[in-house]
Each structure stands twice: as structure tokens, then as C-alpha cells.
Length: 192
Image (cartoon, rainbow, N blue to C red; front, side):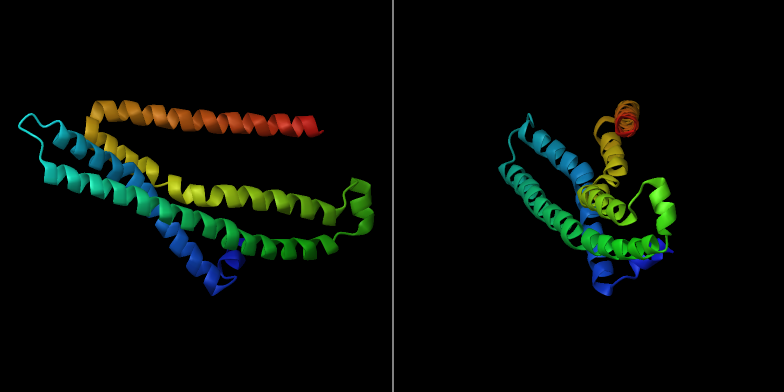
């Protein structure tokens, strides 16, 4: 199958996929779970009515700075690996497969349909490469953010407020997907 062929294309691509995906997943969990807990503890330490615990505040602030800086570095590396190597390697293999399939289409069938298979493959593959390179790394970063964010909400504000917050987040995600779906339909209708 196509997915199996993409996965087994090369050992280097598989290794980079697992490394970059794992780092982006950890970054997503760190952003959604670790960051709010560090901020909560820092605010509680600074606003403590007994007095400011300078060592604890400095430790929390340094942990917060380390999480942000190393997390951003890891995210940039993971995104660039997905954009530059993995998607490019997959698209090259997919273009080769589709070009071979396009040669199997009789020219009479293609001319009847008014389609030039090689031009279609070139245009669509460029668009697919662009979209995959933009969204593949972001998916690895954002997918673990929802469950980790839900856990952080429950820890920080309790069940009733966390359920309300998660409902709002899921509603906004659904509405964004609905808007994108409508935009695709409008784009398709405008192209016809």
C-alpha cells in the first residue's frame, strides 16, 4: 500500500520522522501541561502572604525560561525536519508513483476528459507538498496539546470549569474545521 511504501522508503526518513514527531509531541505536552503548572506555582510563590521565597521564585523562573527556550529550539528543529526532509522525500516518491500511473492512462481518455495527466500531477503535487510541509509538524505539536491541556485545566481550576473550558476549545476547533470545509466548497465552486 501507499502508506507502507512511504514508511519504508528509507531508514533515515523513518528515523527522522520518529525523532521529530517525538520531540514535537513532547513539546506539545510541555506547552499544555508543564507551562501552566510552572506559572501557577510561580504566581503562588510571588503572591505568598507569608513572604516571598526568593530561591523558589528564582528556581521556578529559571525552569520556566529553560522550558520556553529549549522547547522553542526543539519545536523549530522538529518543524524544519518535517518541512525540509520528510515531506520532500515522501512527495518525490509519490510523484514518481503517480507519474508511472499517469503513463498508463491512454491519451484518448485524457484528451476526452480535457486533462493533461502530467500537468495535473505537477500542479497538485506542488500544492500537496506545500500543505503537508505546513501542517504535518503542527499536527504532531497540537494533537497532544488537547489531552495535556485538559489535564492542566482540571489541575488548575477543577472539574466544572475545566469541562466548560474544554467544551469551548472543542467548539472552536469544530467551527474552524467547518469554516475550512465551507471555504473548500466555495473554492471548488469558483473554479468550475
